[in-house]
Amino acid sequence: MNLTNDGGPRPARRRLPDCWYRAYEGILVPLETDLVAVTEFTFSQTRPDAPWAEKRAANRRFTAGKRTLDSHGFRADKGQARNSTGLFVRRGSFLLDREPQRHYTRIYRTPPTHVVVRLPDVPRVPINVLSHHAPYCNPPQNELEAYELTSVVDKVDDHCAAGPDLEWSAAWILGDWNQKPWGLSDIPWNSPDVTDVVHRCHRAVKQSAGLQGLWASRTAVDQVMMDSGMHDAARFAALHCDQPHALDPTAGFAPSAAGQGGMCRIDRGYLDGFTVQAVKYVQVLDMSGISDHHIVLIVLSRRKLIQALRREFAPLEPWELAS
Image: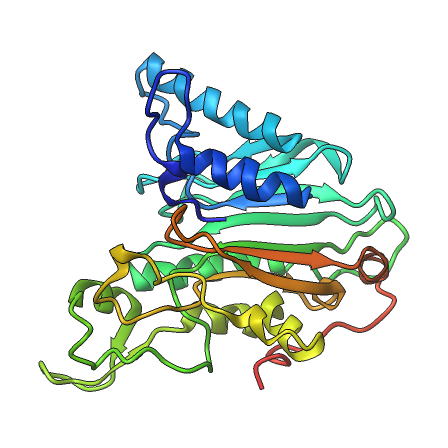
């Protein structure tokens, strides 16, 4: 969920914004979500040198999210960007290690929230869950961060000799990637309707030089994920579960996106080649009037997830869903 600026600032001292209540109480609570990756925790996290009143307000909003969703809450430190990321884990859905969160201090413009959870049915296998918000303004940094995330993907396979005490793992990277996926219909970047040229510079790359050079969307982060054996859950739902609407756009519909080329699918969940096969259902939930991004809902089959974590079937090959 990318709730624009965490719903916005407080309208009153002890009142959260209406958008916040509509997202959390109106949409998430009825779904009884097991995990919620939040990519704009703007007012739920502060910097260490923030005034005491700001810290208290952030803690109150963070606590309200945990209480409303009946969840454990985690949040990454703020980086260079204004926003931070967060993750809610529903109480009773997963087992948590004593120190479940991993922290990052470098590389990322907005550090991801990385939490290790375990399914009670298969407690031996850790599931690395990350809430990631890629940089909107720096395409090379965006790709660099995607490569950095593959350090988590590397743990999916056990590279050591087989043994009873060795662990493999699962990886789920959920977030706003600020790039469209590879291979789907492109945005008409060369249209005169595209008037936000700075946004185009962030999202597209020139194929030829000069003022009239042709532009094409950047898709490097999607390619990095597929090269490393991660898979787009929505693609799996579309190809294997007969759910073409799983590929519906997630952003670009809000009035603030005028002149940016139209709607696109920049919010995506990547799962490793084993657990992606547990995907049962993916839906893009309408957030019009609440946020400038829609929510991506991913539902997994518990039976298939158990089988995936136990390695009872082979993983999907890299790029297998890209055809």
